[in-house]
Length: 136
Image 1: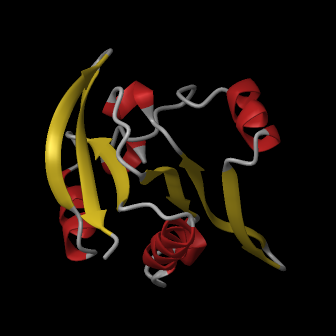
Image 2: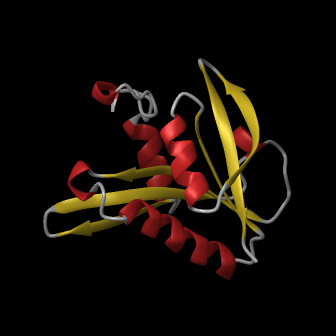
């Protein structure tokens, strides 16, 4: 992503130990095929780190990633729609996600999927856009 001028996932920002712990907690979901991993996302609730102490029934998408070989296939949206169905089944009222403000392309993509910006929050070294869509 850095080669494309994006800083969404800088090298080292997702330590293997942290991911391993999240996998153990059942937070990561993957879509793969015979060639390997095609895409993944992480689902959590609540998300105090980014959304604060909010008790609104919501499911939070993090770590949405699609392999280059699957880019342009609609897999990212399909993964978000799958997360939407899980959120509905869990009784959530909102599906929420975030992205770095320095990546306006993601803002456009997420808006085209029905998400609206609700806030921005400062993180160490970057600004995050918080987005949500209703599950009605």
